[in-house]
Image: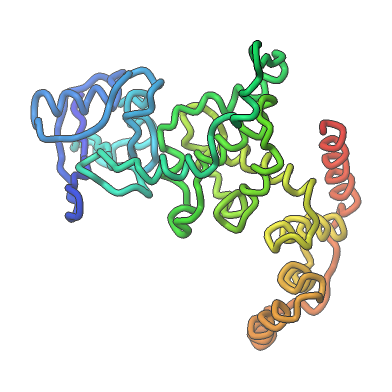
Amino acid sequence: MQVVLKILRQKSNQSPYLQSYTLEVEPGNTILDCLNRIKWEQDGSLAFRKNCRNTICGSCSMKINGRSALACKENIGHELQQFPASSQNNPPEITIAPLGNLPVIKDLVVDMSPFWDKLQQVDPYVSTQGRAIPEREFLQSPEERSRLDQTGNCIMCGACYSECNALTVNPDFVGPHALAKAQRMVEDSRDTQKEARLEVYSQGTQGVWGCTRCYFCNVVCPMEVAPMDQITQIKQQILERKDGQDSRAIRHRKVLVELVKEGGWVDERKFGLFVVGNYFRDLQGLLSLVPLGLNMLVKGKFPLSFEASEGTQEVRSLIEAIQDQQTVKD
């Protein structure tokens, strides 16, 4: 069957443009197979990265029909099943573009330097002190090693980085790939810097509190590392060690849980006062809420009363059960 690959081509600091290539393909052909054929048979100037061809190295990560994926893993049949042709008379089209949140060098090749630089910010290696065990290996039990299995599957393909909405609006955010690796370090029994790491990962919106929880990193990860879940694990450990006075980000999380336990859902009147106003302790924070509050009042958007939701007791019981389970686990 025929298929049209529409590839977003670009040179550094130049405007991108779409170029179409028509191929005779089989449903089992991978996107990487098609790109190879284009380069070998139609256009030798097309640039893209590849290496293992077996979902191990992560080199061929790119945007395929709008989502970040590995070209060696996705095949024509799967793509056409998800995005069927709009017309019976025209061959189906598959759009391919470079990864997002990274500068383009040429065509589908992006500069990965920001990706690696941000990874270095979380110190992605077991601490030197932890490795300095004289005359013997630093052994781990099977249970200790099993805690590293999921995060250890990361192949650094950049798919999560490409889809991260937090990075798009906040260049200081270290990214889901780095924080997934950070969680691996936090869980590693050989590392001696856990407390210091958690302090670093909790700073401002550069670390875990910069995550917008859009879930895209989990959706596109080809190795099921689930970066957002790893970020949540780090947050939980930070919250267990901190109270609401440490930062607004921590207070935001704690107040949210408190209010849901109290009324089944969030009492918006209290939320801003407790989080931004720090339970009426932060005068500057309280004053910052005045313009918003007045605007809401004028437009009839300010809730004058709060009615607890149905099933509040059940909601409270669920939250407490999860909290008790987490305490037992720790």
